[in-house]
Length: 219
DNA sequence: AGCTGATCATAT
DNA sequence: ATATGATCAGCT
Image 1 (cartoon, chains in turn blue, green, purple):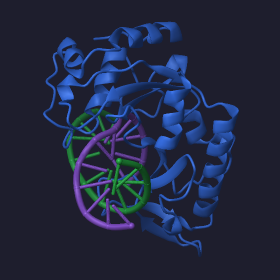
Image 2: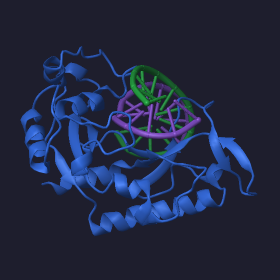
Image 3: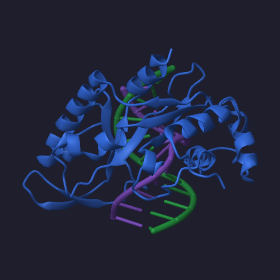
């Protein structure tokens, strides 16, 4: 049982200690078996890192390191060392639509993030993948203005009942995509005539164009 | 090869 | 169903 970090400094020290280690080494420290692949274990790497760094939130809607206000995100890298996947931020509440960026869940979630790069070339077995150097990030003013513009455009459409017209092609850094168990999953929403409907749950995701900048900024 | 739309596991 | 953690896989 890893104790939660009491300060930002403690968290960064812990992250520094695991940099360079393999996922197998971390799993061994916690008596866990490494799955052969991630098809049925898509969240395994993220949960392993939560354990290793003493995150406390579990599945509660709170920052991973609540009292120091930091969110933990793993960042899978391809063989070129660039982000391989988009990053899920949060689900969109379609029955209580946010309208103010400053008060939005997206802004709060992204206010302070500890990114942990992880090797994720499919040719490298999961157990052998190495952990990279952590990056403690907050959006700079340029990044935040793009995020805000994307969020406002997308939320405007949602508030107009135009969710079904939104595609993942929209947004420079933020995009809207399904966030559901499958296409049969439903949540409450509103159509363009203001009528209540059931629709596919959606979430906000960060494009790799942003996470790639965050990675490169460090060098 | 990168991207979008679809999907997987677990806890509450 | 919604929150957490994400990656899969077919299409362009």
